[in-house]
Length: 315
Image 1 (cartoon, one colour):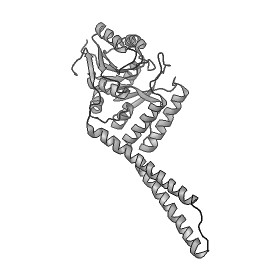
Image 2 (cartoon, one colour):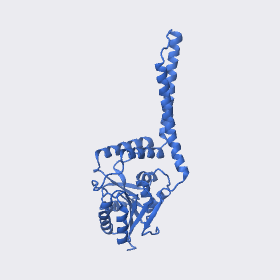
Image 3 (cartoon, helix red, strand yellow):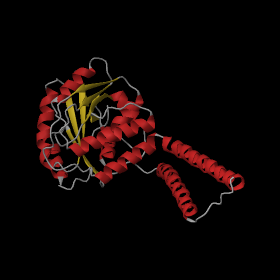
Image 4 (cartoon, one colour):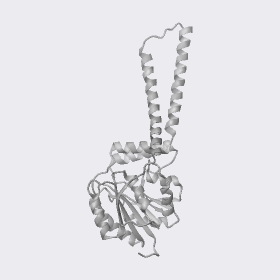
């Protein structure tokens, strides 16, 4: 290792892409040594169902700069990223997916942009090669997220990025259970840039994010980052109560001054069920927040490691 060159750590959560790993390693090694820079590649096995850990072990045995982390169970992509960042020791840290949709060759582009004085550089997937449903959901998620948080996000930006080690040190201090790596980095406020990168189609397997998981991720992220749903429920309840009061006053005046008698159970029962539904809806929103507080109060670790290979101390 040339001590005069920077060390670039590449953090890769691994799930369902065993056949891509060797090609990923070769392209990463070739790209980073050509910058030129030293490298370490952290492959975090998030209980991949295709026995990816066996390939990770082989790569670690062939190259001591490859480090393997085997999580005790499937914790999720962003927890696997957190595990990798907690053990990365580089001057610059790259986070990318394992399926080769993030092109390893683009790391040189990100690093070059970072040398202009930026502490975080994101890769913008201007021409995404994902399915139409996933692209549409991504846009919908970020628009909804921006509405509830008052921020302006870029739906073309995901995990693929390079960050200075001081940024990652700040990230390590954030121990929330609900995690979304790019949003955390944007919240931190370091000098950030985005640059267009080429995005490839998925070369192996299918995304583990089905519609149910995506909806859950969106709900958890919004609840974790904003209390606006609570304020909206209060406002909505106020307007319903105000409307009910005005309508009741209208019926009162018609009864005493226009000799009009209100008839029928239907309107009464519909109103009761409507108000009851609103109450349960508001209680549900409140329950989500209480549930998240409960999760945070337990103080459980974000992840558990079964085995590590080529473990090193952070510099």
